[in-house]
Image (tube, rainbow, N blue to C red):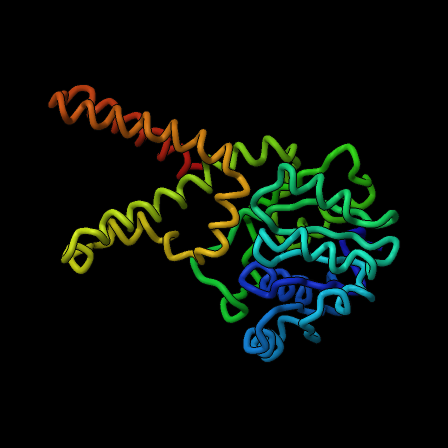
Length: 286
């Protein structure tokens, strides 16, 4: 039997990530049945009409009772309460995973909440977008992307291997990373860019008449500021320490640019821009 296959998957939060995961797993035959859990009937009905899931529920405790794979895909700030609600209904042998972009203390808290015989394997697929909801779910969302798993000493090896294989089958490149290292890395490469994008739009929006004159440059730079604020507020707060560290370093980079402009130092300004372009070019080349 393929270790990445499961019988019954419960996806708690059928938005872009959860809905795409459900659709992709069904299309690839990785699960026999999927139940989607959500708060709004409209989004759940949409998930049903698009065949993302086989059935829907609003009570996560009911939804997980027959599941051997449970995916936490709602807002990050709801994970603890959700696990508390479902823990008594989880069966022995069930694997719980998630798609959250902050790990750290959250991983150890969830590990302490799941009952004996239930494995928790923390995950973070590096994909998404500024859109949300079941209407934007795509079966190919994870193809060619990276998925980071953050196991601890308490993570059962068999469950870890199963979740790794599951993501491989979805088309993702899977890597392992310690939870704390994960949070520091993504404070820089994901959370800081989102915070800066929001701040830039706040700045430009304060200048009356400027926004309507914006071109593609501003649109490209601030695309991620269109992401749901309720999701990113949770992420910023839950990775506060590393985000503040990255923000301090970003402020130093801004200050260097500012000094070059104040001093009208063309050589320094070009050097800073050239250095940034070289890093961006390497990123583009993979």
